[in-house]
Length: 301
Ligand code: URA
Image (cartoon, rainbow, N blue to C red; front, top):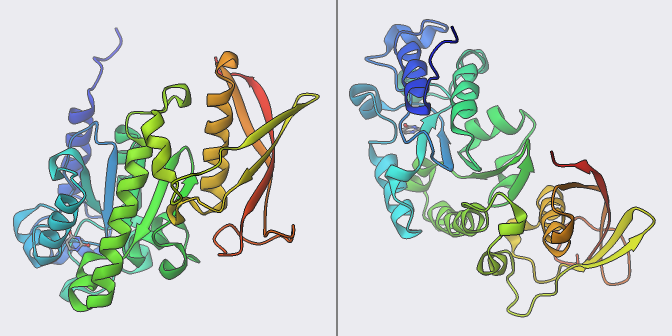
């Protein structure tokens, strides 16, 4: 007989149970208790911090100290209830003196996050600080270069920003963090509950534009390939990455071609240029146009 199905909350509790008794790295030796993370199993948004601090270590809950209180205020400011999101950390035991976790400690703990994510399937993952950003996006990633922008990878959005603890020490980082949370809200608005592009709510479309009179992509069919041109001048900075533009384009084209529902589209070529056709990166202020080829790759069955 097949084993009974495990629901999401139960699966998360099993992972949490393992984390609480984990001895995979030396951090377990000095902890009061491990901090697995918390939130509902259907949370569409996941936050990943660095590691528990003193208060988290005492309470066994993530982000309950000063940084947590700032995170709560940021969430309130963008009207997202803390109870609707899942909050966890890159490492689950407090590093002594709140030092940065070592790479081998991060590597030992990461499988827990991978397992939690395979239960949660979050549509948007927000990485708080450089440690989470390097652990999830790659060790060569510089927080300053990726923060505040939507990156599309592995079927979900990744969004890195400063750690709230850093913002407590610097007014300019606090302002940048607040601005990034406004951008995060934009990303969540576009994504939340709208997986199927055919059901993408018209209102949500406006969230990707900074310009009140945006242009939509122009699609021309050519022997199985769709050639797309798009004036991207007005696209909000959150979505000005190559991976985000490619994903948005794919969705725009799917929405326009609703009759072909079930067809999976792949953006095979994407070039961003300035007004005179010179290639420039999408985040460049000179970038005004996008040219792409989009191909159907089969049925979505
Ligand atoms: N800082 C973190 O990175 N995580 C917490 O849970 C608390 C503070």
